[in-house]
Image 1 (cartoon, one colour):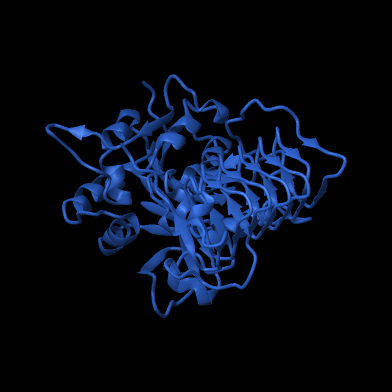
Image 2: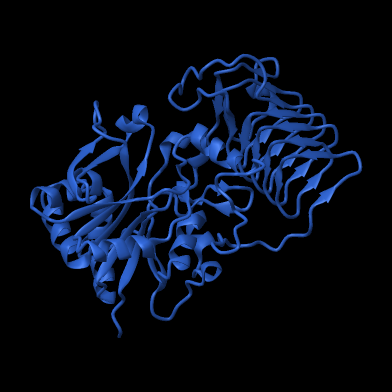
Length: 425
């Protein structure tokens, strides 16, 4: 068969633990975004918009929803006889099985898949970023500079540079030094986790590093190996909107960005469409007493209350006299009457009773999970039942089939959580 010029390997197996209960039973790339999409839609759409028609999606953590969403790739025109999209979970080799233990290890375990297409170049992507990028421009840059590897970089505020892998370059954008999360960064060019490699170069580097490092990683091991062994690495600067939605605050901010009057990240540009799997839904219904101000509202949603500055998914029901502000309500959720929901994220398939308040009271950081729930956002996990007449504060995490008995006097104070896991049989 004809060899492919370039194929993409999309890393989508991470747990996304910094998103708390949003990723309890779903992989981070499969989390809803913008009332209509999944996070992985942006990377897949970038691929097909850039002319890349062969994508391997490496899955591992809680892959059911992600696999179901991708299917055979029809929404992205990736249902090809030769190429297209392929789901690549860990698999048994000889007599043993092995989990993916690092980003580079995951690609190394799928060398045979890449060899099948015999590409000149391999594009490595992450499935948990929100952005629009023309990978063809990056490939042209890579070829022009006769590079062995090209790394996409993005300017971040210098006071945040210590959180990223930083590329130090010369005046021709050649990378001369890589620093992983440096205490005193020399510049603010952060790696986006997007790489183009010559396949021959990458194949050799993966074999070498994987024999040394049990948890082989591109940033920690492969890139330093290439630099230390005299390979030509270049930095390709990206100037568009790019967001790592790895924390609750970042995820909430990226969603809220969509409903600005003039958003930095525009979903409505006709020349770079974002594709997704579309469910068949009836039109929205807005009652005569309802009120909507600066919101995105999904198909099949019924609104009888008042919503402000919020993202509402598809097939959501909002009862009479309910007020929702500055919140994300995901698909297939029912919210009763006389509720007040402020600055909250409510996951899919959730049922909220009548006269419920969420996101009220003092802004007290979570007692048990201070690293997750600290920015005032309260989160309700998927398929949760919130009973009637309860009051839930700020920085709270709620998950499970809850009843009034789970609350003290029908209240959950700010900074507290109720996470009631389902007992598996």
